[in-house]
Length: 399
Image (tube, rainbow, N blue to C red; front, side, top):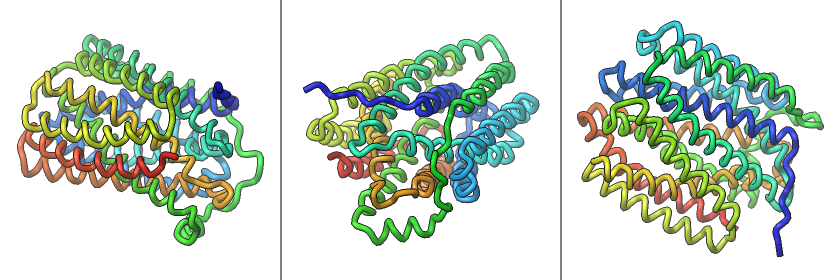
């Protein structure tokens, strides 16, 4: 029997478009800004680790501080986050090579911007993709991931080629245009029809602890912690490794594009062929293969082993992140936790931030004890162990 395709609302489509534009900016904010920091810091990973520790602490902090306002005024909070991203870009534009001197200020503003952006986005996604079968959220996650991946195929190589012939600050003007388009799209987003409950994180935590349905929610927070280490920290390390091995922004863009293409195929395949028994087998493989490959790569860092490692990771970690994306919204039983979407997203971001901060603290320690690429090699082995735990928690969500 052919599966009936769930229809996305106009708001959901608008959120996908905003997310796609944000993914282009992420190429700038993360991939190429990290490359810029690495270059200006004389090939040191220490500044990058310190920068991201501050960014992710501020993201978690802003989810708590602005939680109530974001729950009642999602669009206003979203626009605030978009405007703060513009402030960060303008600072980068005017500071130019002195940007490394102000990385702490930049991290605080960027962290607040990301918090104000993702807090309402996550809440709006939960509200606009909720149904009993969970089919709408799967359609949303698949459509969003494929759109973002397609953007990630086109723009890294484009930006990398442009940065080879133009200045880093000139690229900022293009990203500011994308921010203006994002603000325009927010006018097509509708807030929740009903007046939301008052933001009450304490009451939500109590309910998670006391109810049987809270077990799935707690398991998802373990996924979030592992996800923060495996995806966010790993992406920054991969950027640095590409620069070490391939040296130019153009090569950084080309390789990011190749890896993004594999993500499109995997994301589509997970949704197209989704069956619990298939996914369980895939997750078991995802727990074993990347861990073995990462040890091989850590022992022998060459261009060849890097490509093998990254392609394997792109396939199997993409499976884990796709399934964890489903679990982010499906783990919250709306019959039991009705009206607690914003609180759930806040806790999710806190556990993500905890994982990210822990990962970057570990990277910081490695960079102080070991020199150059050795620090990254040792840290990659740590990530290999975390992937196993990540897979175990994702496995529990499949049903």
